[in-house]
Length: 101
Image (cartoon, one colour):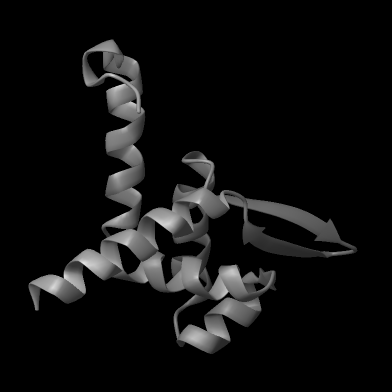
């Protein structure tokens, strides 16, 4: 394990940003869906019953933190989980939350 004192301010900001992204229920739900398989904005919108603009906004934020990536299939953009380690972190948090309830 890395010594906390060796983490610089920029790294702490990046870590904080990832936790901020993971702290939003809608983004978490979206990440769980993408863990299963790649999806387009319209598929996500239909599955979650969200406006496409809301889905696009959440995906954009997740892309900024390098949690979600995308590939183009013709005219359709498919989104996928880019950082599976984040899901390990989420699973650990869920396990911890279950102990608190």
